[in-house]
Image (cartoon, rainbow, N blue to C red; front, side, top):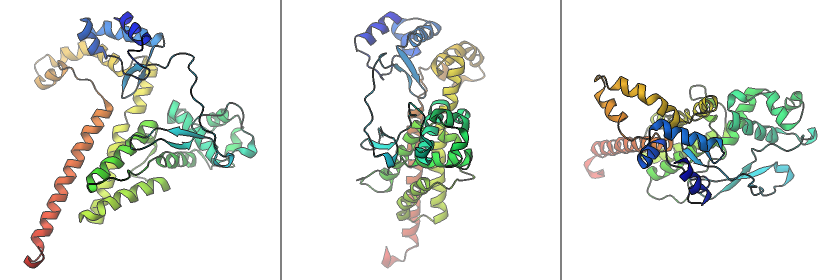
Length: 337
């Protein structure tokens, strides 16, 4: 089983980044127990052949020794840059999130460099690993040097959110009205949260931060809703519902990464360990519908869950907008209908 997967990886049948069979798929294909399948994937992880991507599953790792292509150079005034793939359009260049190999001269240190280094730390270690001292170490400067450019950590996090939201781009050339526009815009926002899992914890809905890039997103959503005869307050409620949905869906990403780092188990392996106890509990007869789900081949996929939830939200908005349109037609005088 593990040997066959090694062979398929070595032969290129499973390419870098491609998802390998899940523990459940392995149990079906080779007829082994869940625990055996989990141990096989753990062995491949220990060998560096596969790695776990939260919300995706176990994928083939990049070959050892592979040198990534260098990022395109950028003018010094603009700071370091990198190319970021987009789910809603062509790749684009944004401030680099990779730290420099040597100390940054203090005269070259500025808010953009500090924010880029901070996002690097948060992307890799989460907000819990973010501190002014940690960022200073990444940049090779004294911690006090940072305070000449940012007020404190709270100020820095707001700047990070602005930079992350600034990666969002509105879908272009979208025909068909409000629905495809919102669908594309919300998916692009989800992609930003997937790239930066710390955003879900950092972004507040009840105490919103002053983020220009976030305001640009809000303005775009409200403009999309403006033609639907929706009251301003209701339109803003819809906007907050959508952004809070994305934030809520992304809230599992950082804790899952931390739990995996602490336990050494991805979510599939962890669930496999819990399955006997769970099966015994639901097998008591008290939870027949849950028992049916436990015996079903269900793989939790965060992206698929996001897709389903977005579909339900947009379907609900479509019903609401139809009701508003019907009420408007009924209220209009006969000669205006």
